[in-house]
Amino acid sequence: MNRVVIFSLTLIVILLTTMTFFLMNNTQEKMSTKITKPSSVKTQKPDQLLPFTTTFSIYINGVKRDFTRPKYHNQSTKAYITSQNPSQIIVTEEGLTWQDFFDTLPEPMKISSSCITTGLGENFCTTSKKSLTFMVNGINTPTLLTEEILPEDKLQIIYNNKDESDSVLGTSTSSATLKM
Image (cartoon, rainbow, N blue to C red; front, side, top):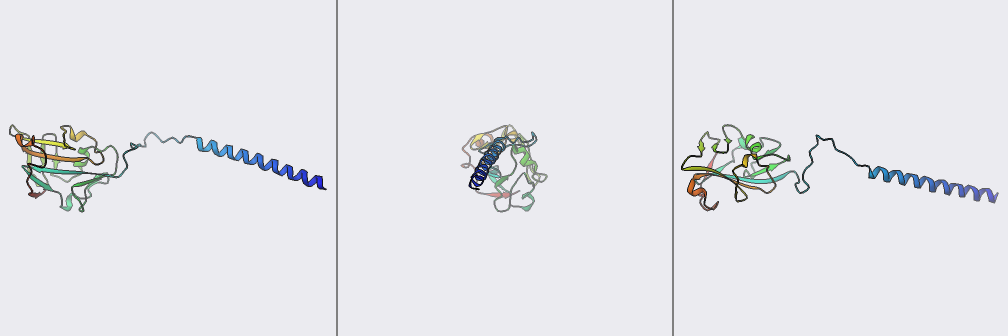
């Protein structure tokens, strides 16, 4: 009877060892299998976490434009401003351009590379004496509208006399604010 018990225990140990080996091997194979995403799924850049924020301001003839009116707030789920901080844009989708954001603002507000139409319907276009300048992080960016919005960008749009547009940003603008 002792031999039967020893044989049975040995057989059980061998079976348990074999099962453990196969289970662990199978689990490792599953863990090492690559998961592929469908090609329609966008992947974000590793350093770009969504949502992110960026800021913008618009100065026309030295006067900062104000976006505190509710008609400008929460106009899109992709990129929007809120009443808490209407100079801050919250971006929730990767790859959006500045034009994408400005297109979400209500008419008559619109921006092109040479003109800006305010929310009050006023038109300001580049002329021989006046210019519309786009500055991102202090760098003149004439192609702004096609540029991707990036985290922590600081956009300033300035419509001014051509000689004043060349001055350092923020130093030639007045403290007056006009509601759009």
